[in-house]
Length: 605
Image (tube, rainbow, N blue to C red; front, side, top):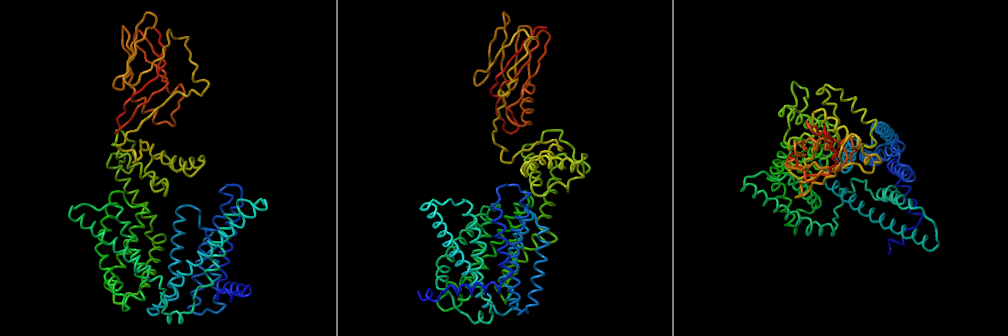
């Protein structure tokens, strides 16, 4: 209550102004980004090209917010003059201008953006504490930031909910017509402006005062000691039990265990950071033991992690996601070695090295995009050469059926390249002008998904293959094709050139039908994917498996009459066969025709 008594509007205004003066361009970035987001919500059209500049502005402002925050902390550390601060602001604005020109709302750019923002957040945690001393100040500063983030989030959420209830009350009680857009716009304002301003108002910047502070929240100690540490210990025991299992059974670890080891390690390291100031105090023996042995206990698990990653990469190559896991694994091994063998064991090592890894992963000479593309293209080349689809560095269309598993592997890599990298690295593999064909596809496609699908299918067609999903390998697939009866012309047939017409249904156990065309008997039957038309003088036969495969290569299940009409000619009889329906199933490249609905037009020669 005493706290509430000391609050006044004048004091709030004064604190808000002081916060703005301390972090002017941080708040300007937040305000600009918020205005851009609200403008985007207000727009009624979904034209991406028209709204692209707003999306780019929001992305740039999100980077500017944390970048200017880091610059302000740096200026506090070295006590920049106003002139020096102005130079840093101009430098930051110049960077953001270039960044706006460079960034695109596409997956690769967004991954780079997230890595940059992560690196800047981590840099903000240690930028004021670059020397070996002031470790307590570093911990106290980040503790204050952590608690301030939680407090700001709580205040923002409660205030937002309160305002929402007030708006609903005005609608219900006074019949006001409030636009639905007010709700997301209010949320954007609360998160973008209020939450940021409130957070910045509580950021400590006096390093000397932080170094002399030794307070430790009791709630944080209870949470860490009785929740986090026991959970970390339980997961440690589970992982060690699994390690023992694979040693006894002498088998490769499951791929997902790498994610589990990483998550466990990160939570364990976070727990160590939280208990760092009090780990050696009297009465905290459990914390002291945990902090002493955690990294040593983690060392065998890094071997398990390396084995799991190696298995996955050796089988499927490197992708962006696997690169991230590999980079985190390298960082984890380096961190373990540092805290096991180094005498300094400075906790600033953790955010500093992680920020370097984040930047190198997306901007370095061997970044995730270059490595992933190289790995997948190399894997594809190996598969093509191994299966005779590439000779003298040129793709040769498949002359024989490949195994379904091989087709699925090739399809998976081509699909991945279509989505993430394109096919520039493979241009000289083909005699056809692949670039022109893909450009034509992009010009006609209506969505990103259509571009991916069409370019993938174009490249596979150049290889003489069709797309095969790995999910479908080994599974039974059902197919059904029918005459398009919604087309007015599909049920109109010319019969002047024929003597007889008959409708035939073959399905289930009834795959034989006896007919009488005038005085002429005829037997229609389906056996082992062959359609037999038996007359007294001769028997006409038709292989149906090629028909099903041809239909499968097309698109959709409904077909026009010309696609489903075939003519069988013998010495005495000629029959035009129109398939109204043909259905069956395929498993492991083997097709089985199960049902037919036919129209037969018979003429005597």
